[in-house]
Image (cartoon, rainbow, N blue to C red; front, side, top):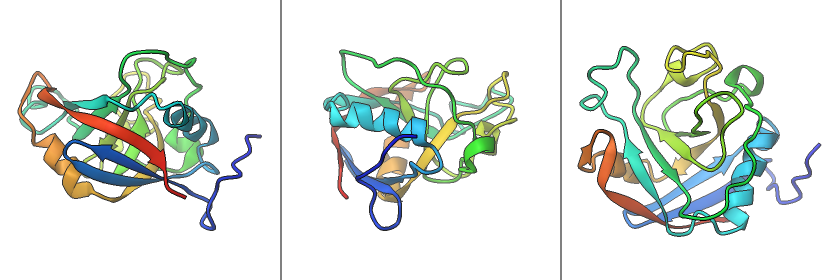
Length: 179
């Protein structure tokens, strides 16, 4: 079992995501998603998100041709080291659903998530376990939620994009713990 000596009295870890578009605050749930939270915090503590970016946005317009549409902003670290991929903690196991403001790990196949993460704009149930967005049915590993800054999330989502990639990515100045 992982030790989370940094938990506050609510058993959550609070983080601040400072971006060139504004600041987003998130709370993470290590008791529900210990592997995923520990993975995210490894990147935070190593400073690997500094000078990373939010680079991808999904909107009703750029998802128009997909059968299963989603609305998220996706970000990740800058260049450099990736830690080993983690085992997926599905929403079926954690109980954390992809609701508006949920932060979750991006991935290709099961057990491939490393550093990229996304934040949901509105409820995205098709990203949960047995959802239809990913053909394998595992969904994505949700591990926290936005507590302040959804206006910044929506501002990032509204950025000009081509094929879901932001023309001007939003720089992640830093991500830090604020407990």
